[in-house]
Image 1: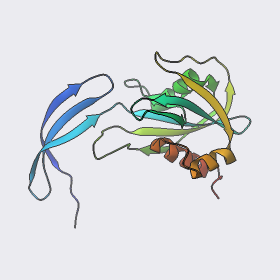
Image 2: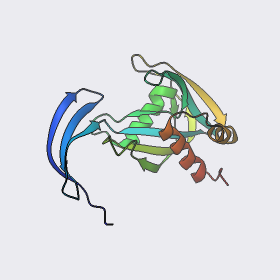
Image 3: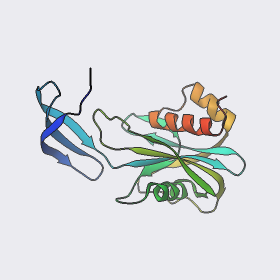
Amino acid sequence: MEIKKWDKLSTRYVVREKWATLRVDTCKLQDGVIKDDYYVLEYPNWVNAVAITKENKMILVRQYRHAADIISLEIPGGVIDGDEDPADAVKRELLEETGYSFENIELIATLYPNPATSTNQTFTYLLTGGEKTHEQSLDEHEFLAVEEYTLEEVKQLLLNNKIDQALHSAGIFYGLAKLGVLS
């Protein structure tokens, strides 16, 4: 069977807020059926950082995530501000969250968090040659601890399912693969 894109016939916005927008689309499916209640979440795009220090340690952050009610071990990252370049956004987020600056940067993955219901993308970068150059400059209501792990420790955390955020697990996987740690 050939898979075809749906035709969007109309859109109605239910919620328009800074961090999330909810719309309802009416679509004509490839078989001609009209689906009049397809809910879509519009989020801003995100960046994630697989950040490696000059000492070859990966920087992870630990913080509380209210929606899941968990304390989560994650890679640093955040929202891209408006038309900000993703590479600039990841460097800004790293500096704000960790106080680290990096010598090298490379895009290693572009992923959709949930393409069935969400519009946004996550750009994951591998940054190397990191060193602490600043103090943290956290956003209001942002509380996080910066932690460093050897690449072997991070591999074990991943294998033991200790990284709860799916996009962060994927980012770490891509980063470890790029670094040759998964072989």
